Length: 267
Length: 300
Image (cartoon, rainbow over all chains, first blue to last red; front, side):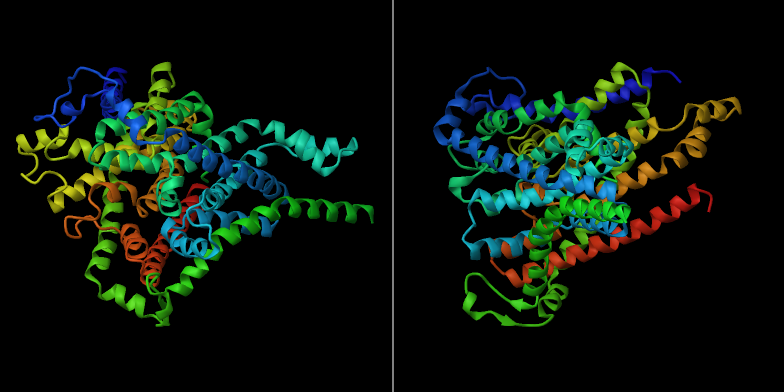
């Protein structure tokens, strides 16, 4: 078959998939009167005004720090709990282990509101509502179920003979896990960390209802950048440079792990 | 004897490694789920907590008598059917177009994943702006060219629903492409050569060789997208808020509205549990289909 037609189709599709993303970032350089110009156009004289407005209306340091705290905390929590659990499931090969694996899979399919609403009430009663801790707990839980499955797959693909050999040489079970199995599952760890971080960084539902105005994340701030009267799409485009561009850049750089994580952590 | 203690110690070690994750997930996930089940049996509003009363299944009866809730239920199913159907069809076409393993295709596949990497909230906001009737590029020209009525994409019930579907298709088709492309890469080349040697047309090759071998990947993509589409929230929340009227109201949005805007915790919990029950039924159906497909693949 000729290669021309498939490539034409792919090129057109790429244009459709990328155009809205480019629009989002270029809007950040659009003067306010052009954003609300009539009729809307694609051409404009670029300006940095929106970035100045952004600095004036948003506490970028606080937003970034909160987003990093929540996403970082949830990722560390999920890795500390999920990686050993994935190893245990891969090596145990018992009915109980499979039961746990499927329980985790089932929890991943639960619609977020089903946990969000009772969790909101619970956090309110515990006095944790509005703190990053509440969001870290939920994101950490969601990522733990996911990381466990992902690492389950990675460890299962490693032959246990290496660890057995280490045991014969006098290594403890913990030593065999930490020094033999863990380094071999390196790519899995990178994929798990990347996806856990992205899940938390990109989440809106939990972050918006469980945090207070002082503890907003960047994703939540995007909505207010769009909405209020003084600031408009231009500010949203500017804020997107902080809220989405770094994560997309890292995911593109680590695309091998991103793709592995998406295709292996799901079945 | 030493063998027994060795096995027992090994098992204890593995349990120790797995236990923290299990306890944590049970506490943070199952705890609230059970709480939600309990709250759905109460008339509980956070604005007047002292008047909490046990009402049995009244919240579920209210769901069945609430036109907004029933519309949300129907919309959720219709949305899932349309969005996932389009994503599967377009995803298959693009995965086939990207089948060749050359630099162009490899780079295209990765760049195509950018929508998947974006936060759904940003995606919703971008399309809210682009489709805006007055100032949006698509919204304005759509109106001028007569693609959509004077009230724009979000002002008309049908156009609003179509917009929500289109936004989902835009963001998640690349994800389907990724899974199907991985499935295609796993098809052994000899089988395709054998089909060509037997003089199969490209349509026959697709229908008789490629699609049956791609079935596990197709079912996996279908399962993942269905589960996700069923819990649609962000793009509706920022674009239409369920409107106009209840035209784009969906279950998750309605539960959040009832629970975290009106603070009707009891009723919101009931709506969330109905959503959960629907997803559970869909998941069980999928597992049954997967098993049958599996059995057919491995020769009954």
